[in-house]
Image 1 (cartoon, rainbow, N blue to C red):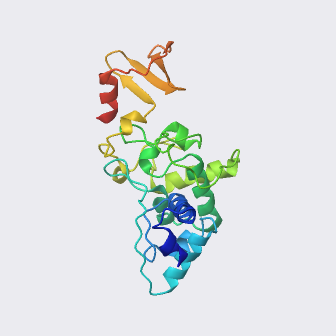
Image 2 (tube, rainbow, N blue to C red):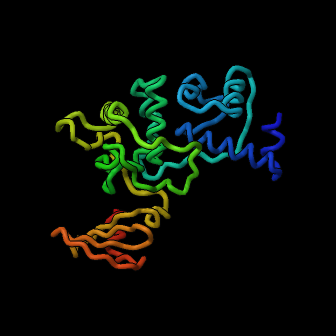
Image 3 (cartoon, rainbow, N blue to C red):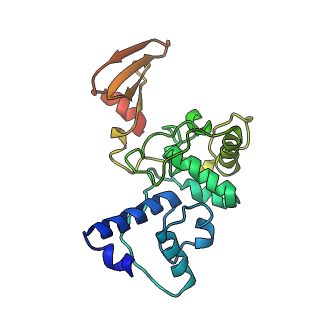
Length: 241
């Protein structure tokens, strides 16, 4: 099989094979192994491609293929995959496909990608389908996102988060995670290099990075911009604890 012969080579065909497979792994959004993950579920929301056809063939026949493609990692203790949560909640067909499209558009994979630093709530920007925590921006997306989403898409996204992740108390704007979804310490040592917001309790000040410049915001609503990549140790610790 071309998949087996070329994926271990450094030829142009081999690089194309590996690139397509890795993009598919990113699109499926859950830990994946050929012959183990049910193709009947994943085929509902993933793009038709040759790797998907291999998946369906292996799933229907007694074949074992061992690959070395890495899964997209969890970021925190207690972290979990969003697509697995949506599937568990009973979503399927076109709804599952739309949820996956919205997930990829926001460049999120797990609960940690849409949670506040304390790991107890969903961020307002994620709940309203604007963006995640931008921790996976270094991944190349398998397909370009749509320009915008309609109200029906936004409602579907909110309903899916409420159905299996968010505590069903406190009204429609509640963002508190169910206790079983609370997140613990970060497992990725490089996460601080990708986080955009930091808070210094002693100074009552937040700082954010945009276009490689740091903007500083006080608790009184005042803003001051400093074009420097330096950031206080205290502010970094407030994220890691």
